[in-house]
Length: 544
Image 1 (cartoon, rainbow, N blue to C red):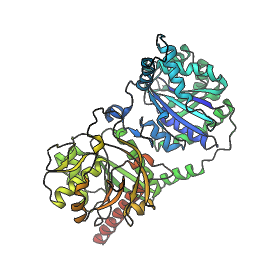
Image 2: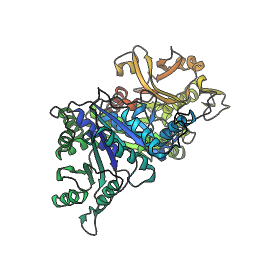
Image 3: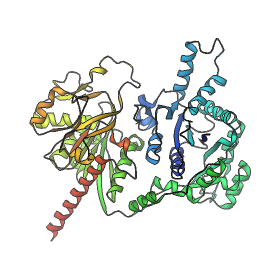
Image 4: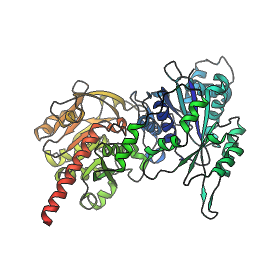
């Protein structure tokens, strides 16, 4: 029977439940077990697709087009289990499904209530992932214990063990052990209170993951075990990692977490194999090169807005044994101060996706700077759209060229709505979403990076390159390096007269892993290394 691990969090938010859940999933996979991951979010939005990155960070897109929580990015980077629309549910989705059933008369006139109808719906979406091909389902409950929004989910997972048997469920609670500088000691009381809140609703944690800045002493662990009613070996320290989040799984192994879970759930597993992961961390700690990359975006000050971008750059750095110094540049600042002051000295410039007009001209200025100064450039989604606008204005000479997203009456609509998008009024879940095939031009830089001619990448956008302008672009040296929908949609552009200038309409950052860098990110960072090396050689020649 499929086993279930439920991950909850207490004391404060942002403790890292997603990273911890992903790490547990990875450790169980490395023991030969088949794992599926799931996130249940307590907010009422149907999905995060209409939420501002300032509110919720990036929107992570799956192959099937689901717009999901950024924690699913952690799941995919750490594990290999398939993620689908059943891997992320919100309160909005749960209530919407129950209300639709009520409207269809499926409850036969009964009064629809949180218990049992909402909780049954929640248990149903958890059970969807359990099958003969799955050994363990890990379900992370968003929010913090004590939040009113989380109560139906906590009640549902309490009931779940009654349905499938307590021996098939493990409750893992992530909590905080704060250090009080004035007292000079760690404090366990917040953890005791958090566990107490769980126990009041009928959930006794089997395992406590204690987030802490400092080592938790044996005496403190004994106190936590006693007051929280768990065995001593179930109190696991998870100290802050200054170097990399990819150290988390190894830290958990050192404290016996995987052994405890396998024993508690009576799982038949193999010996743990982390050789490639340890090798990856070794290469991170011992880089051979160092380069600087500027990420020019409108949400640059908010780290989680470009979470997968930064991770993918790090993966490419690992691939090349290179330490990356990433500069987070707000595109609005480039509009005010100019690219020369803010971007000079960087070895590569990346312009990511986004929505809305704010900061667009700054992105365009940054791309022109990269093109004219021969700095490696990588554009993603809106970054590609800004690249073709810049090229149209300053190379082809189409004055006023723009996107109809930002200027409806532009004389040259280089970027415009897809025909399928013109009559859509609802904003949620209606973009071009998910994985789609594209064909690459033979001999193109993209084909060289991928080492194949057909690719599948994930999309999230409404606007496209206007195909009526393809001829003047190619006539002025731009290469259409990738297309889809029988050559109707432009997916990749390149400028062959440039050391490394490539932009894509899709989101390659969603398919990169620390042990397997995405080929386009690897190509981009490789070009940045070449530029850095050649500049260093020129400086040395001048000095001699």
